[in-house]
Length: 356
Image 1 (spheres, helix red, strand yellow):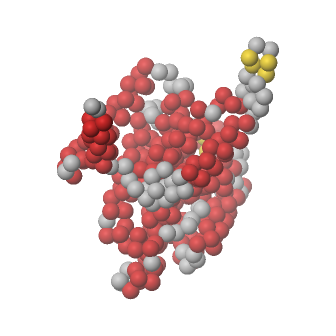
Image 2 (image 1 turned 90 degrees about the horizontal axis):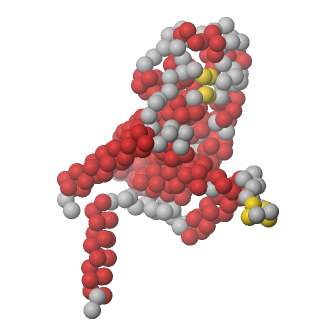
């Protein structure tokens, strides 16, 4: 299959997916769990791909994604709360210090830029570190940011430890899908560019990459800022999904969840991160939910089914996936329509040969 046909077919599949989501919205109530999975899965897919850009393609082990998502979520919320509603939101801080609002798309872009700005400042000293030391430093940054945003001295801007609410949200599941899809497409284009190939060279061998004339510090800083930019956008989308923002929600556990999604999907695979994001959210939020409720067969209570058991089963499933797919579901491979079609043809050919 030629690249042109592959591109056209990919476009048709994406269009069919969006049409399918639109049809679901028309026939199902908005409270259905399928919409929660689709919305949160799209948001987590974006932040997982942004983390994979660092961990999988640049070879930088960073654990600061939750911190950059927090910055993006707060930036979006602060600049989209309608002026007339700010006195009720900033009840303990005199109506807040920001007295203007931005359009939704402008606020989303600003959320990414704010996260990228902090990433640039943090990256100047932190990117000199490697491996586990870099992970510890970025994780520490995320925890510091979470504490600072709850500081009452910044209350007129961040509302302290109180909720930010009443900002603009989306009405359709298509919105996070389109925004996340567009951002992931930009990340893919970046990975396939000369900068992306330079990052892969740095990941494989820094000494050889430097000998080839690649500026290590500049490329690492670029990858760090781009990854943080899209993490900030995913934070803005998460704020819209949750309808409230509070710094205490962006704990280290959120970063670990994102890292788990990247590992399950395959470090160095964009489609792997997208696939595992939806599987992770669906299993955690929907498919295993029944395990948290007591079940009876007549008068006999099924043992173990109680609140919290879902987490146990989910953890066991994750362990099994990691054991049997040590390189992740996709490894470093990407889903290809032409490769998939070729595999179907081979299976069909073998079945024809097997017939007498």
